[in-house]
Image (tube, rainbow, N blue to C red; front, side, top):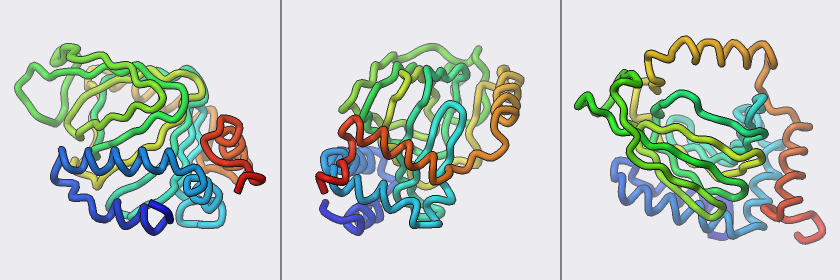
Length: 222
């Protein structure tokens, strides 16, 4: 992996229907990109000059999402940064299979097992029992299939490479008995910030933080 085109080609070659194979390939791509600081630097610095990428980046009160590469309707490669001590209070699923490689910080992750005999769709907290607790440190990576249910507690300043595959579910599901909490959390976010678009200033601050921790190179190193 030496160029952005190589990253795109490897991601395009993944068969997302094969869970084990896609996880192995995704893990390899994310690890190699994390180790290739000049290439990751090029991808980060290209974002503000690529409207289709910058237009999909987001800056939320608790986290930022920088889109590094994207296939509309397919995969999406991002950098995530959690600004504060963020907690997923609500067990939830995802519409897509997701793959993550931790660059900085880390999180505690709780995986839940359904007891209602179903493999997807709505659920409540009464349908769940804790299955696995994992601690994800820098250098760790994990895959979460779209029907799986989890919660995470992120350390402040956590940064990860994040890859999502094509959508496999019509929607993501939070625990239905906690829907009122979901609504209130969204309302609180909207009251704090009306527009979640990442501005050039937000991007510059994100990139400066990455440089300060050696995740990407400084300009004098290029």
